[in-house]
Image (cartoon, rainbow, N blue to C red; front, side, top):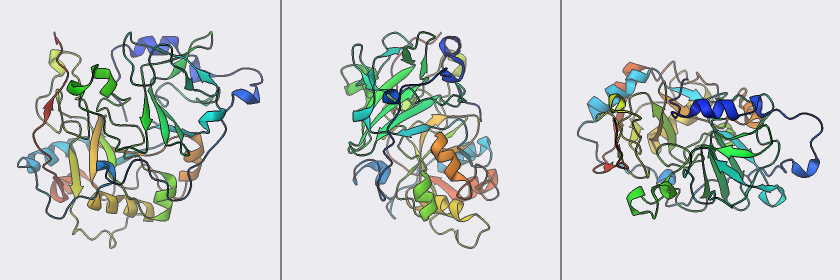
Length: 349
């Protein structure tokens, strides 16, 4: 599932040590101390849009039919899992080495990643066999402190210095919604690793909840033809067009919410148990647009520890037999959440 990379992705690839490989023995004091979430742990507050069910009387967007047909151009729903998703590492941040992270793009960083700041970065944050594409999104999560360190294009130079295309500290006990960029002191302070500004843990499918058969939050999704230059909360920024030819004034903007028909009988389908849990979440909470991708996709935990545990719980293609292009157009709707807001002004040549 191809993702739209930033223009300077070639710089990232050149600077990154292949697979961020480590040679020789790594001191134990530099490795992550695992800190798995307790049973029932859920990121963000109860009143977060990510944790709020869609009301039965929610309004449908007037252009819903056109928009869901547009959504279907990305093909059947796929779950990004072994790649193109989010590498999650649960840690005890108090036990992790604190290191500076250089901004790969000058002046581009979020709160907590300012020059001179240090963030918890264990030496084994990136596994030795992780490619730059697979580690495009990395978040280090301390569930005890309810904090996450979100990064995009995280890597290390040959000298061992860390860098990131973007980094931001996220309060997982808050709403998970940053103020719109136009209200921030600096636009990037409302930004996130994703182009929408949404935290990486927001809407992410987690192994434990899918295995338990109950997902109590909205899901995060992406598709190929997202609108540029406009956004809706809970997004805090718009998808940017790198040039005039890439602008797309139609389609779903970042932050748009879709919903599977609550009356559709999920139980009497041939979906796997894990896929049924996902489908029910799409009925109750819906899914929020957070990114652009080469297909219509949901996102699941993609760290090495989680990948081993997904076996027998949920597979990337488990939704595809039912959630086809025609099914999406017929059984989904777009929720009316107000007028989109403008993205950060820029000169597009």
